[in-house]
Amino acid sequence: MVAGGQSSIGGSFELIDHNGVSVTEKDIINGLTLIYFGYTYCPDICPLDTQRNLTTVDILDEYGIDVTPVFITIDPERDTVKTLNNYVETSHEKLIGLTGSLEQVQKASKAYRTFFRKNGNGEDYLIDHSTFSYLMDENGFLDFFRRDLEPEDVAKNILCFAEKNY
Image 1 (cartoon, rainbow, N blue to C red):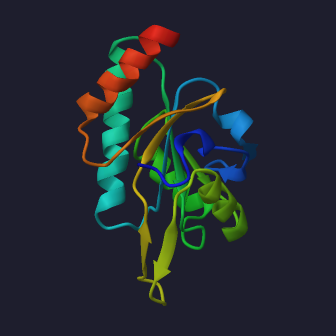
Image 2 (cartoon, helix red, strand yellow):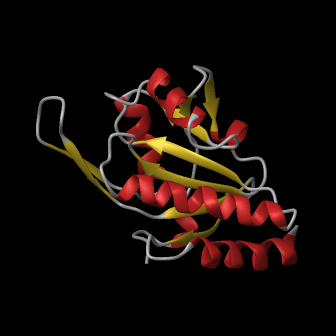
Image 3 (cartoon, rainbow, N blue to C red):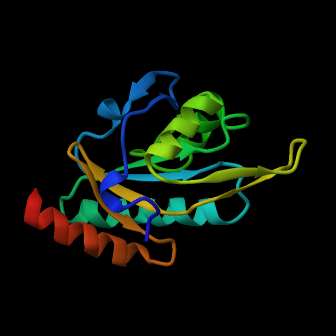
């Protein structure tokens, strides 16, 4: 379960995309959107969750369902526009990477009821964080997915929703 109740997930944000363009949630969420909060320096969980989401997008493409994957960094100190651009370029043609100031990222994180906490100092710190992926559309929150689900399971859930509503 997500803290704070599901109806309260999502909200306004202003961040910088992987091309250096200032964007809001209205620019990013134009249809089915799969949002994940993570960081590119994450050694284990984030790469697996991101790949799961990207595989889900590919599965849904086969059914003609368009879903935009979004990666919002929780590490704006290291995940600069350039870093996110490189990450996106090597990940998936549909992936949108978002960063911003720490305050902007905290505001977005709060809107989605996620948490993150930096552990350690120096260049090799880790970040504890929540690991939900959120399905959104322009009307708001639709569903969330825990990290233990396989891409096929996530795609199946999104497909059922999309067939009823899109």
